[in-house]
Image (tube, rainbow, N blue to C red; front, side, top):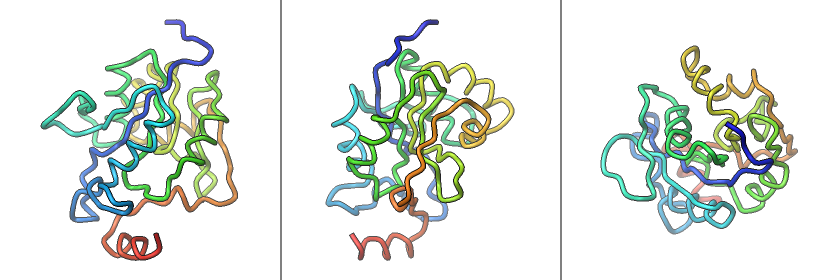
Length: 189
């Protein structure tokens, strides 16, 4: 399959996780006046051609992509998105990242390299951050092969040709995984 130099860009809000550490659905937490998944969806929608929610099996609507693989990992949502729309790039953002803002999305898109498998930010450990990443269409087959060996999207990014953006301030990459973290951040925002 041949892809354009710059394929269309779709957004994917990952909200199919178990939220076991949080004890409740992280995608429904309210930091900005609406459930977090809606907040991320609204942000992404301003920057992409179409936007979808990645969800587990269950009730669906036109804006949802249901996990279609037997993988307990965010790879499930990413692969399911490629299965539904294989000729587009996917800007993936996890729903538990409440500090993501327009400028972070704009910077990622501005630095996008369609000749790589993905474009992502470096995390605090200087390794690629897999849950705020643009995955290019040419990554699909490699992601499928990778999923047979590992469930880690980070391992995929470490082992493939990716563009990594290293920003000095990385707070926006913080994921909130517990009630204590939620309460502390909610009081700061």
